[in-house]
Image (cartoon, rainbow, N blue to C red; front, side):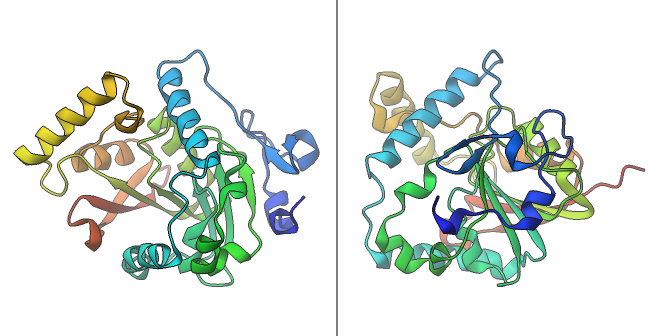
Length: 276
């Protein structure tokens, strides 16, 4: 196994069965190439086929190297686009990155942060181009990574200071369950940070140009043009996003509109509600 993927002892100490939520250990899980496979699927539930199709297409896209041929300056620009968000929201302590793939958000975290990424794409770390590794210094550092789904998080309750969900909540099968799981694994004073593109942007209203573009894209996707196929499981407006977060154990604390995306991508900070 790649030595950069070996789990820290603190991660092992908080492992739990993703279904029972009871304390567990690495020996109780399946493994693939040394990576814990804690994935639990809802194969007979509404939305699974749509989710599975999107996930399969994404993994094929990644395994074929498409989308990973940018030069180092493209990744450096990407870092520049994201930096203002993480200057504004300073995560520290213990951080769970849900749907975090290779954990590139580590680029913006203090060095002493306890960090772990979970993602259903178990081979995510096999697809990182050298140009991206050169841009993201964190990709040369050890990563705690477990293959798991947002709806079934393989950690004990009250284990993390932060749960980070960036560009993923509109791709999960059951967003409500994913947020309930985030609440479960957060400490009593824990914080949730959700970053996502919202329909209609800050105003909640699409321009005629955007509505026309979306109609054309949706039509082409339905006709079988894979390039235009929509793999999102839902399309929240900003209001929808605040409601689903609030409905699942959180109090909204703050919102930040990522400057580069011009009021289309929002990051919402929420505090875990106290039970009483």
